Length: 325
Length: 203
Image (cartoon, rainbow over all chains, first blue to last red; front, side, top):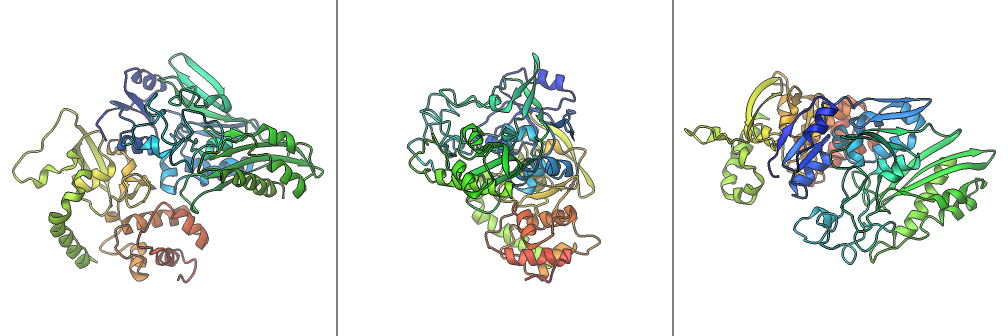
């Protein structure tokens, strides 16, 4: 890890001002940034410590949830109101990382964590358009078992690694952002960018901007939600495929369904066609199976990750069965 | 325990001369403690900063580079080598310590960000010469083979008990998932945790 200066501002304004100089990174929980700095993927000259900013509280009530960016993953996951009103969020948090990492990592940092693509994280490998724009992509024709089947292209096929972001995408959450030009609120689906030909740009955050909070609308009437994560080992691993579902059932029929999946897209992947297929369907195994079978429609698998197509369908099926049981 | 510690420390000291080359690159330059280079005063570079860390109830003034991790500060500056460096990437849990009562990975933590916080390491668990019940349980249950992951396992296990997570075998396994044991002592670790929580007779 290369050396850096460390600024510890006490206010948001001071933090934003401190980030004006070049080669500056914000640090919150630090669990991802520290790994990236040790691997020389990130080489900031200056760090701005966000821990002292007043963004570490959250409120959950009838008008939804507002979660400060510096709330620790473990503190949010343990909240009884979150577990009751937003089980999909609590389950996604508890399926993430390890207890130690969750005690350190923040909500804002989780949403901004970088991909686990091995080509991105290994500077000994020259080609990575995300790390070094224009250098190529090692994964498209290389080791791509863990890579995306949605949202990729000729430049990048790295998956977005956050479980939390998938749950928040299913719930139509909004990201609050603050920078030198003031504040704005961005729907999470617009917050994340497809790689297209600029995979180094992953979000709409401008340089020097920070996430200040996440807003989650109240659950829909009668809605139940659930997060299912499938991975190569039982715990402390990133998703091969995950499913975030929120379904409202009335008189044996699905009134509304919201579905997002992780481990499959270059950003948290919402499935509007499946949601439409589920709406007003009776809660029967056959109907759920038919809808889940459409989960991977339009997927573009690579040489090693075609298994994600049936895994997606089955993961979604199981998540739907669980949430409608 | 103390006799075991001494002999183990001597063994590591002796073997370091032989095996030191292989690991030398992992030690940061700032982390080479000046105090062991007898006679020469500490070298202070312009990048260095003064920090105060409270570790196991004692305050220590340190001069370190901002990039110094809590793990390196504990081991190399304070010579508290009970906290282990395994992967140095937050994946193995060997460096688990408590900061303000919460278990964290010291390798992913900057020491400079730990000021005004209470840090507890494996060296701070025993009280008045008496092992912490979790330490005693690990010995009684033989919850280790090589022992390298053990300090981290014990720090994680004591936190798990304090968090109230030890509700079942499955819960204990899940909530200990941040600590890897390459010797595979997991059944005995589980038994040790259950001894302390009274949640069963163990394995």
